[in-house]
Image 1 (cartoon, one colour):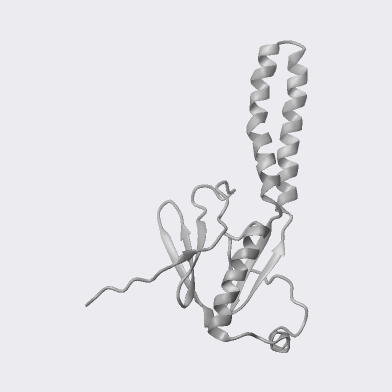
Image 2 (image 1 turned 30 degrees about the vertical axis):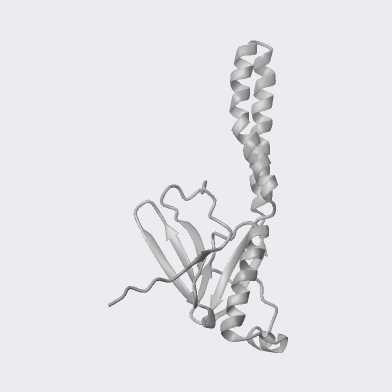
Length: 180
């Protein structure tokens, strides 16, 4: 019996390398398959896979999140605290001030990288069975590209939906659904 191979294309986006969940918090990636979207979650000790067939995908909600402001404020406060500390120590010792100033460098780099990557968002995939948070889609610019690629595949499997069909599925205004 011949083995069959499935070709996957990786979607843009990735889970942040620094997460507050620690090392057991899984990293996530999304892959386009021939008839399904594959979500791969990797942690230090295991790897899990979830398939979402294009014919079953009802919608993808994307909502801008306040995480960019929170991370910017946190990094800014730490840099400000270190600079105040450097100013106080510089009156006593210039070597100590340089040493303390070195602590601000990673936070300044983090602040600049966070601002350069742009707006943050949350993405949720909805099927008839349930909802799934897509944690790899966390930056708005990458999420838009990924959702466009998924939409092409979903429309190929389901056909284009008319606006009236979408409204019949979601009769009232819908915000991002809670993740189960």
